[in-house]
Image (tube, one colour):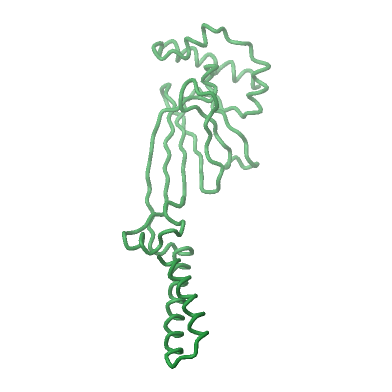
Length: 214
């Protein structure tokens, strides 16, 4: 509504200045005031998020290693920059996913790793976004593009303590250096019905990975 009002008042100012009429100055003043006020409110919405509020949501889901097809206990990441703060992490949302999912590469996104006991991998995502403060704000600023704008996103990965953090470059090198695992062993590691054996097998593979990375 405010964006429409900005354009409408601008047109009104132009039309009022074009015609000679005894009320010309009155209409010009009124249209000018409306234009200045509407521009000011729109500017406040963009610069100070006037009429908006921060809303935080948290979601949690079970995920799998990006190398789940090979049944390897790997935390796979793609380095971005040199600080390590902007690294992109790759993971599977399904055990047999063809192409891995990845975290977002943006200045609003922060990734964290947590080591836990157990064998389950979990991703907790906490997002803070701007949303309309009320129905009146929704009406005023409809079409502004500010609704649901991301403020901050924190991805926290909970990996078993024995998982090995490996870059995509290292993974390519490991694929050439590591001995191929028997198909039967891979199937056993991927079989959720063999939880105890799977855990032991994955820990053995983790030790092999650490040795190969030295």
